[in-house]
View (cartoon, rainbow, N blue to C red):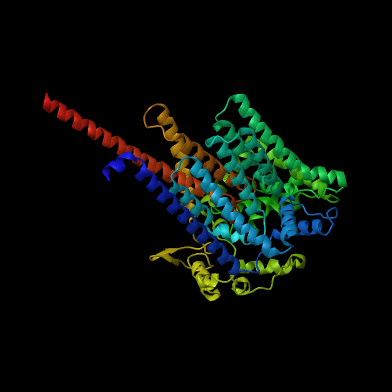
Length: 560
């Protein structure tokens, strides 16, 4: 037997590797299955609350395209989400249940892509699994996956583009092929949500810095990605021009109105006659601002009243839109007003968004409240309202084929499991609820800070570690960390911060905007944990080597 082992020295390590791979496969199957159960629990708990305040615009666009009324549509939203809904309608039929189910699956896909990036960066498998769980199980994510909007598809496309960039940087995927794939994903992203320009720029710049290639090749890869993304982004506008579809405008003026109201100078600058009309209202509202902002989103939207105050008799929408643009440009290009906006508004709203700092940021609306929008914006073409009641989806559709019922739970058992999952901090509750082992947690529907504050804290710590550790390792004070973990951590941190910065700068830190941040906060937290683990392992290795050296020196001295 000893001779056989000597003849096959690699047998035991290979066997252990094979067992480890099988074990990790089933671990991942279990994790993905549990995440899918959480998403299914939301779906069956609120099977008729898939419409929130922005859903109507996207579904109306899609209905216009499907009915051949594309030219007459007058909504101001980007058409990416509508195109996606049209594609699903052609594949599976125009059913709102289909749209929401696909959103839940895409959300799980986003978490898997974030986990893959963490793994590509060199983190052990456990930390990739941690990233997946953090990016997939946050209640705010699943809440918005359960209503039609731009959030789910936008995050999926951002993570897809980041995944392709990480493959090119860490796994030496063909640079130009990866650039083309990134361009397609980023172009589709911009068609869905124009505010994602910041995330797109982060991914492109990160690829340029980290790609292991000559300078000219890096310029070429990034240039190709920009060209493809621009072509995809401009295609809807080109089609509109060809078929003669009039432009319905955009929401840019509405977004600019927030900056104008919050920080515009109403005593100096352009349009002083108009500013004089709106000044008393603006000063009154600014004086009512508190250290924690306003109590609800309705109060946060007072700048629309300031815009109404700027109007003169006979003004058209185009006239007032130009006035708002002028004051907006003045605000962001004048040092004094820009400084006021950054210090009095932007930093505070970033804190609110990342740390659940006020009720607008930390309290998601009860899904039962969406019943108002479901009834107001009824869309029978897509089967909304569905008419389903809580738990009815399981009873109506859970019919596994024979002989699977012998091995799977019954409909009542499955529904009971889903109800228990919702009771672990996912269902609306104004009090703390028991999560596990006596630990109590808040829900997304009470007025307490949720787990996002811990993910945000870990992300900011990682940012400091990368900045300070990079400088310290450069001068030789500390060991240089893994290049992959540093690059992957930088990507996650930048995506998280930029995802929060755009809405916080232009509008405010609303709880829904945290949706764009949480997956990358989860990736950052996992990479921070991996760096800590790597540092501890390195320290123990060095300590062991140093101890062995001392023993060798002591033995040598005794022999002498």
